[in-house]
Length: 291
Picture (tube, rainbow, N blue to C red):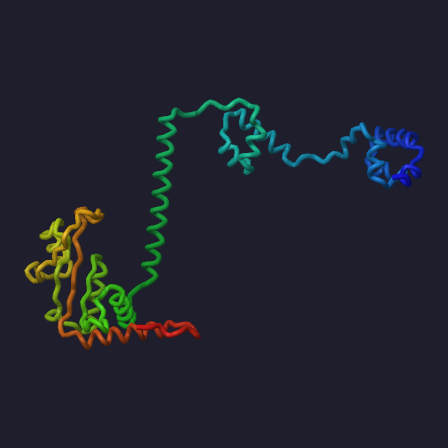
């Protein structure tokens, strides 16, 4: 500091020159170069109290946005509408217009609720249309299945939903149960591909005892194209009063059980094909999947 003070011993003389230059509109850098004062602390002390010239002030990039936001607020726009109009943050808008009066609401609470509900309905309809279109495109992309594709699809379906043999309980037979009508149709088409004749197929309904049993039997019989009398005795599920069932509407029709007699050899072929699928889709180096 002693060195600096000695270098700028005539401080007051320098200050007079710096103030004169400042009032002439020079920037700090220009004053520094004119007076050869390269110490920022001294330079700022020389011009202390003198405002910077207007040309050196950097313009605020948001000045125009601020004025536009205030104009829109005076027109009665909400923060949300101003945000959409200007593309800036709601927090900035709040700071810019907080001194302006809040606009009167354009709608009564009842009208506002009605508009909101209408908007929700439109949104749901749009989303449902999008879902339906996605499903349609995926469906159309599949096209007709070859016999091989149907065979592999049926093997995968059976291994997911059908009865399987266990070392502790030998069940080498095809028995399949499902509640989805389309799954049942696909399964029966697959059995037809395998050469299973109608006389080897046994079917029965499995359903809760509190449901419409005759209605369910008629539904499944009509679906598979047989008289209700051809169905085996329906299996009734006891209702547990401590549980709450969701499947209690009129659309609940239980499940259809499809059993193929004399199917031990066919079952073994299906099991072998399933593990063929597993091996066929393994990535390189992946460990072999167990039974």
